[in-house]
Image (cartoon, rainbow, N blue to C red; front, top):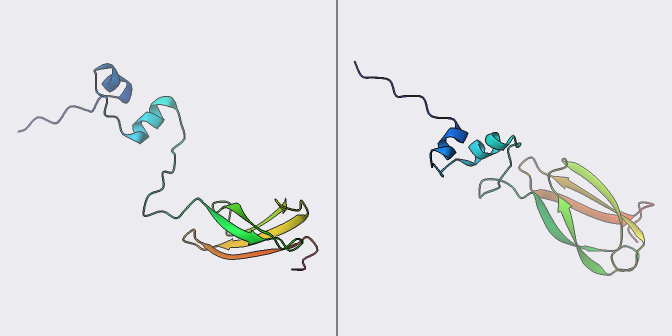
Length: 111
């Protein structure tokens, strides 16, 4: 009857024994860190840059949208050009892609 394989050493002991090939989840566990999402080709983007047009001054500029904060989001921020407040509303699909983007004045009008 073959002998069972010995249990794998704990990550700290493996490091002390000179094993420098720990997996990312083992390093996280070793230091008490929360697992980190590392996006790859199979994951949606975490954020995206989009060109928007201010409804007050009609100038365009880029904004960064966080796609991880929910399927329907509304942001209120000042225009980067004229500093007037505007509202950015957008939807994120279940796959994490930006689906809809709408920019308006705070009173809800587009112009």
